[in-house]
Image (cartoon, rainbow, N blue to C red):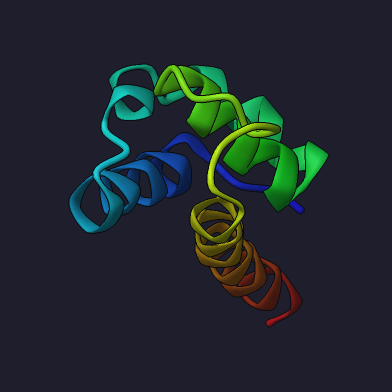
Length: 82
């Protein structure tokens, strides 16, 4: 899947405004290459940027973040297929 800086920037801004994950949005360029690793790795990188440990944090909170990111990745994939 291809995502560009604008896609990632909007996703990170949405994560900030909807979930309070704002530290990652300070450096969106760093996250563009993580799109290829999939939504779970991308979400974990957001958590690490927030100073959270994906392995020890509340599992429901992590699942909600992964779900949000997955939905956006699926939209990008649909756009590519069109």
